[in-house]
Every structure is written in structure tokens, then in C-alpha cells.
Image (cartoon, rainbow, N blue to C red; front, side, top):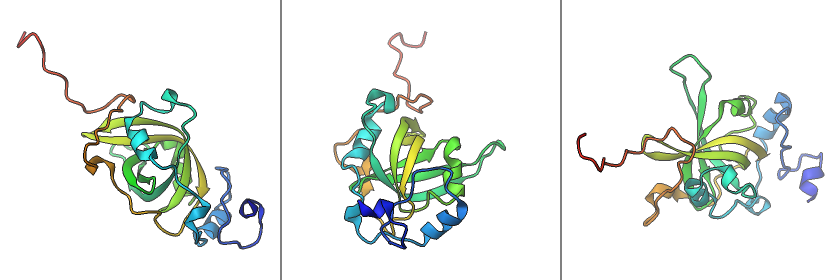
Length: 184
């Protein structure tokens, strides 16, 4: 793949996966768009697998490539680090995500923006306020700004017959089963 090794102003050039990329190079890449979506193929079925999985530990070989179709800063109420909510897409479905605070630098440096393509190295699935949320623990940024949304993804929670089975990350908001001993 010559696009990875070219130093010219190739609009299909891939972004190095280094978190230490300079801010000026990140800013230059923000204006660069990939015009051919076949350059980067997303992992089909990855969203379904993410939300039904316990996390990376359940299958270390599962390292999906997804697109971040939205990034939003969530201010902290306790004075600790801000958080970033994401929407993760495999081109067919999307799911809510959250960056772990150790990944905040990827947003502040401009490496993760709307339409970035990432590879998820480590994650956990959690249920927060009744919704499955994928907590991103480790990612590689493959393309900073793809230039547009890939596919026409729909919310995985609206897919008929789909029910998330993950939540192994703990801290979820699932209701406790009724007591089999009555009101004791």
C-alpha cells in the first residue's frame, strides 16, 4: 500500500498510529480527506459483536476497525477529567461509546475527530442508564478524518430482534432480579 509510505500530499494518506504525532501534522491532516471509502474497510458486524461481548479479554483476536461518526465532550461534574462520548459505526450499525480518560489526548491533539477511522485494541462493554456503551480503553487512529460517513448505519438498539448481552464491565444499571423469598 503506497499510501502509507508516501510523503506527498496524497489525499488518501493514512495517519500514523502514534499518539505522539505533532499538533501541526494533525492540523494538516484535518484538512485532508480520503475520497475512496474502499481504502479503509470497516469490520462488518463489529458493532453487534462489541455490544454482545464482555470485552477484549473474551477474544483478544477481535481487533475491529470502526468509524467514529460523532465525538462530544461531556463536562465533568466532580472537577476531574472531562470525558468524550463517541458514536462508533461499522457502516451498518452504530453504538454509543466513551473514551477512557487516558485517551483524551487523542481528541485534544486533533487525532480523533468526526469521521476518524480507528482500530480498537482494548475495550469493555457496559450498561449505563439502560443503554449499552462501549468504553474504549486502547485504540489506534488509522485515518484522522475520512471525509464523510461510511455507509448508512442505524442504531443497533433499534435493530429488530437484537438484544445486547454484554455488560461484563461492571457498574451497569441493570435491574436486580426479583427476590425468590418475597419481602424478607
